[in-house]
Amino acid sequence: MSRFLITCLQQQSSSATLAHPERHGKTNATQKIGIINYIVVFSGYVTDLNMSIRKWLVALGPGIVTAAIVFGPSKITITSKMGAMYGYDLLWVVVVAIFFMIVFTNIASRIGVATRQSLLSTIREKYGKWVSGLIGIGIFMVAASFQAGNSVGIGISIAEARGTSSVPWIILFNVIGIALLFFRDFYKILERLMITIVGLMLFAFLTTMFLALPDISGILAGFVPTAPTGSIGLVIAFFASCFSIVGAFYQTYLVQERKKISPGLNLDNNKGVTGMIILGLMSAVVMICAAAVLHQQQIPVNKASDMAKALEPLFGSYASQLFLIGLFGASFSSLIGNATIGGSLLSDGFGYGSRLDSKVVKWLIAFVMVTGSVIAIGFEKPPLEMIVFAQSVTIFLVPFIGVAMYAISCNKTLMGNYVSPPFIRIVGFVGLLILIMLAVYNFNELFLT
Image 1 (tube, rainbow, N blue to C red):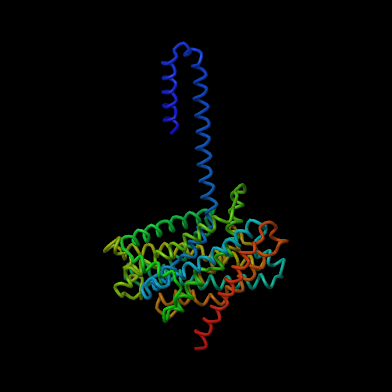
Image 2 (image 1 turned 45 degrees about the vertical axis):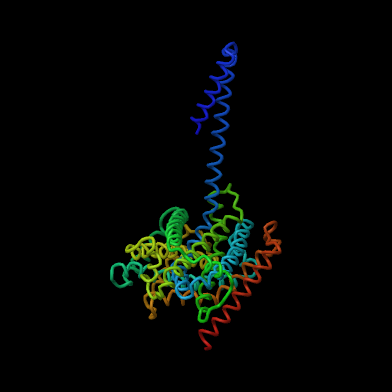
């Protein structure tokens, strides 16, 4: 680009010389200085542009990490089941869940930027040790439930490809995940892994969606709220996993971690929103693929290879193998990310801090992995049922966690200029009411009927 600019300026200089030869000697030095000034200004502009893009991508990191953690095997399984069973009818659920997730991610980003200490430390000072301790335990229990689903996802992604039991693979990759904890710069490794996996999954499903030629009118009709008979259980499971209060809660820690790594960054709230929009896009695309392929052919989703058939328009006979690779990637990224949430926040809940380089935090992250793998191996139901069940039971705990985060975000003394504005307060309150109603309904379905 700079070479092209030099050439143009040289040509301009030559033309001027031919037109006015008497001025050539006098103006030659001035023209050279002008060319150099142009080059310096242009190079500075390119450098500033590259730096701006790089800073934007770095600031985007926490939102992408949150999206990748939330979009694990549970999301692929639940959205595939929703599309296969009900076609496009439940697309509206994605929009509603992502809308509330964006609101709570906004709340979390505000807290992360406004406060210097961790969110659980702030809760401990404001409401007492027992509150922060209970929230830490609650987050650990949610993470352990998710972790069981992640372990199952890893196990079946390899077991179905090789025709073996899933147990050895669950054990092996949990051991590998634990080993990764003791690498230096763990956050940087985690962030790069998440961004790569999210990009690959999004490309595969987005391309397949266009090749599957989905019904556009059916897609548009799917954004009108309806509740097909028998769909409430899947809606609750999807809402609990996609509107992830725990994922939003951890966003505050990711923002603060990024601030420590790059203190000069301006971490505004829109970066987290971008990650959540990517999450919603991925969820909708998987559901549309399942509706266009599986629902049309009346193929039920009982195992991972059934979900893989949604990719056949793009990959043909290789769809199963490639889908299992994608399922493994989603499971392994969530295995590490989800365990990180459970272990670090359990540690912080009891006052031991949440730094990822702390030995206490690392061992508690490992404990989450071990707990999840034990549940996954000992669970008697079919693997995909286990993944859906693990998501639905977390709905009992997340409202209490959300209330604490919401209360902090509305505190003017703590938040200063970053206190939640009226619109965020109203929508956040509605989101919490929805979670409470879903928890009550799920409790009634699981234990009283």
